[in-house]
Length: 237
Ligand SMILES: [Zn+2]
Image (cartoon, rainbow, N blue to C red; front, side, top):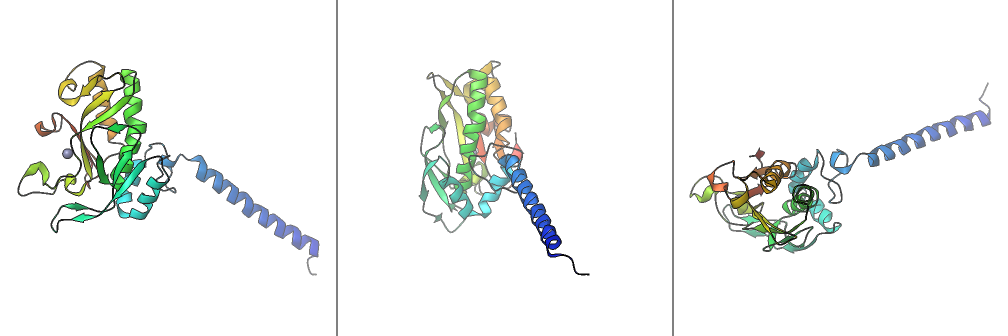
């Protein structure tokens, strides 16, 4: 005997309801996981730094359109920089000059788009909270001594190109705090006060955002600065 029409309609309604509930749960699940921990969401700069943030930042180098978009919809102000290539190993693509980030810098910052994204997140979620925690004040200015520089690692004539040769790195020598005092790697790394504690925890925590973090404990060439990069190797020292 054929099924009454009302029964057929009831079954259809139940099936549609189930699909709707599943979709609703999926949507809730998608949004409930913080962006930095969510493998299904791409990187946005309003996401807090989480377990997956560094991998997502590194992936940005293979997705320049998404990187540009992520900066455009963030609070960063920046100007795109024209691509450059010296025909050998130096040059950059999809680079930007950061005009305004979370924190001011002592000199202009022109870096690759992923590096700009990393710096923005680092300033907001790592640098500033640690400054507040250890020193009770904000960092007013980041003192840096360079981003792009056409050279090989340690300036040798042979060897691997430095991440600086592709504007994928920055060297930070210290910080001007909101009270005008200076915290520098050269003077305060080896101390036993809160400035040293701040710098040491900053080195460790920076590894959540950058793939390369080299400081005074790495070697003598880094005695007075943090080298931060997004190179292919994961180094935290
Ligand atoms: Zn460096």
